[in-house]
Length: 216
Image (cartoon, rainbow, N blue to C red; front, side, top):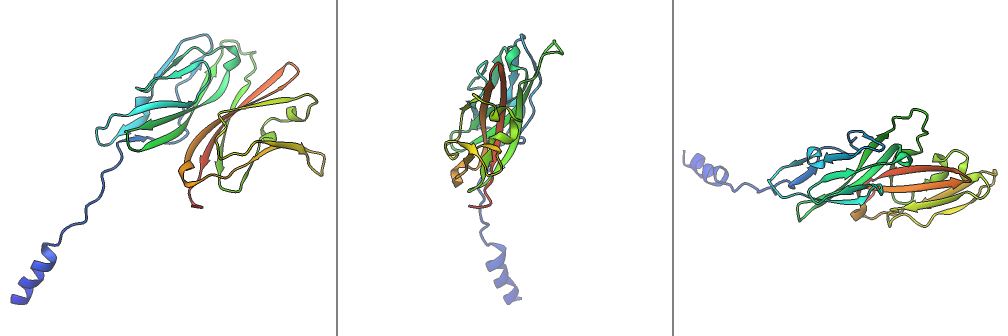
């Protein structure tokens, strides 16, 4: 009996290891789809619907890479009016924070038009990025980049992507690519926009880049 009581003193009253509380502001998922917008009509949506506040923290929002017609308030309200040139799928890069930890996300917003003949010039590509990989932009613009006089413009390019290199490979195929060299602090979702213009044609691709952390 005495031996049993001694073991109770050692095991039964052992101090439990404390765990840290979960972060207050969390997205409910990645690459989430937003309610559709329509060109020429006011758009408004509360991003609070897409987060879960675990600890009752105050969550603040910041737009990192968003279409020019759209604004993101600190309380998470998206608002604006898209035009006909915004028809198609666009990406919205938003960051949430509880004052200690931040989380980025790339959200997908489809802009419709009442005119069925209107061409959609915006699209979204979702890609996974690891250190040492290459992002080949030409793969997403059909043959437009290979046309004479084609111009491209990249907006919101993450710092871990190098300045694009362009040229022709040994098979005569045009390429335009960046090398990725992300660090552990880049892990998560990033948004980038690229426009290619050739003559009167313009194509826009929004990239949602998921930087993986398995290599760190």
